[in-house]
Image 1 (cartoon, rainbow, N blue to C red):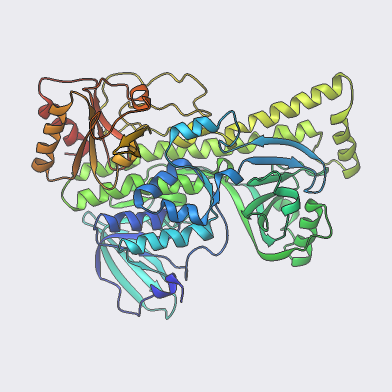
Image 2 (cartoon, rainbow, N blue to C red; image 1 turned 90 degrees about the vertical axis):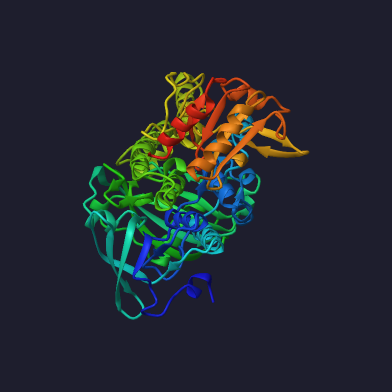
Length: 590
């Protein structure tokens, strides 16, 4: 019996009341369920599906998301199930697997130019874990924390009033309906969110900007990939100028399981997804007729560019694809979804437990909606930025295969024309760093809201391109920078000191008054607030913390449970208790 089957309940066993109802059990919903359970919140998560994802779907998992898994205690389980970052790096453009390679880019921080940046930025490494492999790990993590998750349970109607939300749920096993009253509702029900539709959430942007097909298949391509291991292989053949070329091969399991993604024009009708047709397409882009192919599943999807105008309406919140819908470029979809839940879960828990004021919940929309807008815009721009590759290869709309082949051969011509073509291809591939090495986009999402106490200083001016490069800062609203510390001979990240459902007061030598104030305020406010002093139990032996902390030894940082900095003091003060109390009240929506 699978874990999801074990969670099914008999009709009538659902509660009539709960503090939080989570609708949807994809990455965002499962993360929310796990976090709420860890906080001890009475929550119910429901999904209409019989189990976790049955196909690969999203796969790129960036450092910030792995940090969330680290905080939840499931990082090792995720990494054990994932493909390691060391096997993700080669992004290859070729006419086929067996054919000539046209270009290559080292991606996801694996190249020598970027590897150090990624190592310095986080205690966690990126990995490649398809959604059907990730979700069972998330599910088990949620169950281990005591989460209640009901499969085969569909939301059919929802309405809200000033005091809560009333949801009608239907069993997809026997059709019985059940009404649940919740204080808060989290819509994690994907791009066709019923929660968003029935509760009046509005969206900006467009839908149907492109149409694509996924073909999940088995094919042993070890001979063509083991020497150039990567996550994405772009097959560019004459006669096709779509942004993914003739087909993009996404590695599911090295080097025998794949998703072949290709785009099509709906105006010319739906693509032939018969086993014979998709096998022929796969064989064409492999270029080796001796490779056996087994088709596992096919699906169609469309490119959207949408974000909710607000992530909160009354007592309802949107997370994940319910709130933002965009192309898979940059691999930001699941990552942004999981990080939505990391921002919201502790706020819901603390409000329900009386530790924070209701106003704190407004900060979720203020902080995450701009992130969603940034993500959908970046993903769509990355789609457009693929076009210069096909242009440099000489491909054009309406071109015959013969014309395309002749144009492609021009890439290797001697003389100025060929040299210009090769330079154009180099520039086009270099542009892909904004999709595949966009470290700043992945890590430097920062917040501005009523829950953040700005210290009156400007945000630091980036020394390098802010999309490509991570810029650590302790400016209020930023993610706490990572630095390795020594603790009794063990290496501990600054991020390991934060999180775990608690606030953190971080200071250094001479900061004992801050520690004393934090200990008193934890008792006064009745909240979990740890105080750590770097320089005693935790030693900055590499000097990295000194380089990124931006405050004096006796300064202080107040870090929220989601690792973001709520307040800072550049140094000591005459009345640390009052200063810190004021910052805490703001951070708690009081």
